[in-house]
Image 1 (cartoon, rainbow, N blue to C red):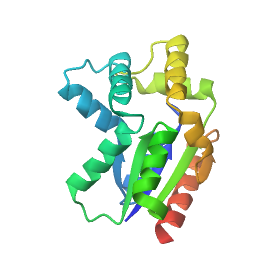
Image 2 (image 1 turned 135 degrees about the vertical axis):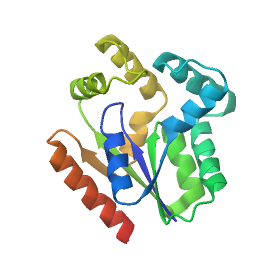
Image 3 (image 1 turned 120 degrees about the horizontal axis):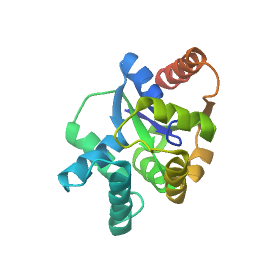
Image 4 (image 1 turned 180 degrees about the vertical axis):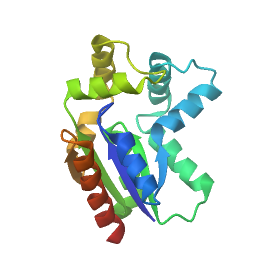
Length: 184
């Protein structure tokens, strides 16, 4: 089994990569969904601050790689026969290290890079419940994720892709990258 991890700041294009993978028949597991499932089970409100705070609390209690471990547990529990799985939403170097520890050479990390103002506008347009209401909240969210070690994870990626051009160009680049990983 090959596992492709995707890391990037909020609004950078991780979900777009996940959707491209789904369209290619690749199973996608969202670490954000894993966090939200656990937060809902704990009775948390489903806004960004509550879910982010819950994720942080769990990291403090159980270690910085708790969400990677819980995602790996989900993969094991699902017992699928998928040859390739994409994990969207990796947030830290500790998570990357855990995936590499458990998956070895079967793990490839893709980082998606995009400037803050572009990401903020994308996030505003998608209007999710956990979206920041203004640029200050957006920057606060970025700082929280930077505190988790996301920038170190981006630097350690096997593949980096910029998402600053057209959507069509981004889709084409991602498809080519995913095809290359799948065919190896």
